[in-house]
Length: 82
Image (cartoon, rainbow, N blue to C red; front, side, top):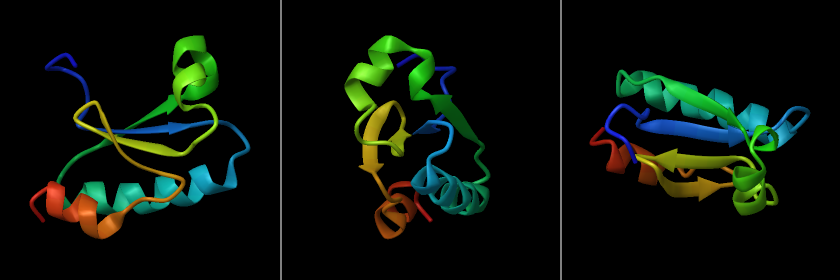
């Protein structure tokens, strides 16, 4: 992962209800940590789609998979030092 990559990324796709819920949840937790969430459309990159397409939404923290389908809020807050 490059040093300028966002700490929090949400792998998502258009029309995904779970993605919308995860986005709202992740935005709230990110705000507590003074972070911004970068949304990534899994369908825009065939490699990303092949790896994560069946599991969206996926939360990446520092480039590593943190949770999928739902945001693991207690674990994320802990891992962000909140």
